[in-house]
Image (cartoon, rainbow, N blue to C red; front, side, top):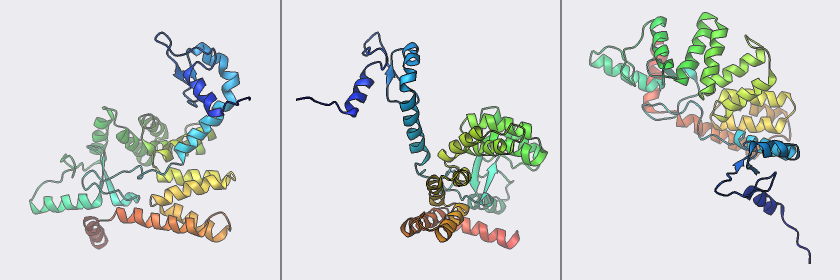
Length: 308
């Protein structure tokens, strides 16, 4: 009777020895996985290069699968994270939190307002609600604070400095410089901003591959604006199922624009989005929004409405 070895067994066998020469791992031979697909191992760079023509197609297929698994995994929270003081999720609305240039923290308006009331009651000078550094009153002071953080390789500070050059000084070259460094250090907003620059061709040459790369990196890191932009790109290219996945992920994190896009698809395009999936997305969106609310934050909102 003939026995047929399963594909899984073949993969296991390849993982136990060099895929090119067949050498087994021993004390003097250390096998290293292919860093793209992780399906096979090699005993040397020479073997990896020699095996590349045979492995290339399967490697690309598996690498794309791994990338999609990472890309479409629902993040536990948005890239903004939690307020470092009250530890509640930060609202996606940029008006609901403030950047502390002194310590590179994003603090919710509820905690900032509570700190202001405490200082007023105790006749104290205005300080950062997190690190108690004196509050800066000029752009020059803010810039100096950011530079101090940049000197210690603070990615968030670099990203904020890029925004400063882009919005306040119109220095796009410096903005790209800071965003590039911030992205290398893992700042998701910087990745998203770079994707816009590569799409528009501002300072840098237009490059769709780099635009997509930065969008995906930002989306994986929880940047909901990048996720929304990525959904639009996929939709425009006719990859509707991928676009829907991106929109649903963004909606689950409380993104209002993504919810509007999803609602338009549900009401105007029949068959792409089921009633059950849309209802689930609505519930998740509401839950994400509710998680950002607190009595302290409501007091801050009421204060702003009354006094501006």
